[in-house]
Length: 97
Image (cartoon, rainbow, N blue to C red; front, side, top):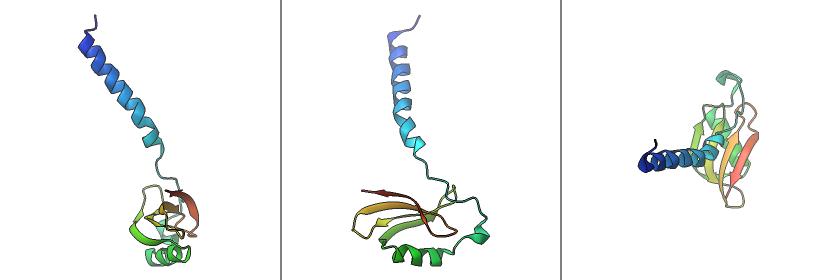
């Protein structure tokens, strides 16, 4: 027999897990599987990012999925999270607020 308290706890845990699923599904994209020796240097990539109109970069990092990722403003001044292919500098995914 289930006690009401145990059932309510289990139900709330399951509900929370279901709510968290979409956020874990939005992991960073895979940008390349090429070795880092073939990547643009961080300095070269930062120049390319600036040439593409991104500015006020707060974060510039490498992801586990083989991307350069930035957080900053796009050319229109909107907040942007952008994933770049580190081999050729192309935009793989851009999330703009």
